[in-house]
Length: 196
Image 1 (spheres, one colour):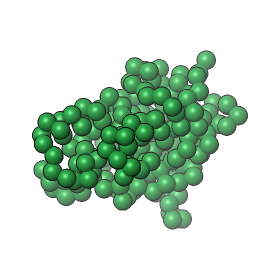
Image 2 (tube, one colour):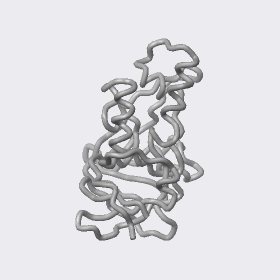
Image 3 (cartoon, helix red, strand yellow):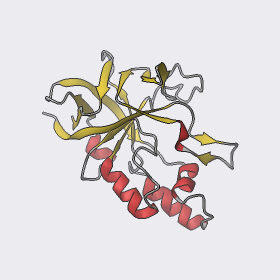
Image 4 (spheres, helix red, strand yellow):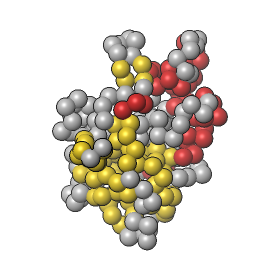
C-alpha cells in the first residue's frame, strides 16, 4: 500500500531553458517558470495552459528546445523540506519552485533516491490513484544553479564544490517519468503524492 507523503502545493512548467548565455559563463534564471493550477502528464512530458495558450514544458519531447530527447527527465518532483534546507544554507532568495521542478510536495522530511526507489503515486484528494511516476533519478545540480544560490557572488572553488555536493542527492529534486502504459493524467494543486 502506498504511503502518502503530502499534498501538492505548487505545479509549474518551464516555458524555456533556465540556463542562459554561453558556456562557461551561463547563468541560471527562474524567469521562464510559470505556476499553474493543473497540467497534463503523458509519457512525452507535461503540457499546461499558460496565458490561455497550451504550452509544452521545456522537457516535453515536442518542445523545440530538445532538452529531453532521450525522454528520461520528462517530469521533476521536489519537496518543501528540501527548500527549507536550501534556504537555511543559501538564503530566502531560493523561493519555492525556483529550482524548476514541476511538482512541489509539502513534506517535513528529507528524501533520498533510495527512499523513492519504488516510484511515486499520484492520488486525488480523496486518495484515489490517478497515476504512477517511475524511473526516478536525482536531478543533478549544475554550476549555474549553484551560482544562483550564491547570488552570483564570487566564491572559492572549494565552496562551490561543497555547494554542488549539498545540492546533489535529491536536494534539488528528482526526475521521473509517467509509468509505461499509463493513460495521460491531469494533475492538480491539492492532489496527493505517495511513495509506492
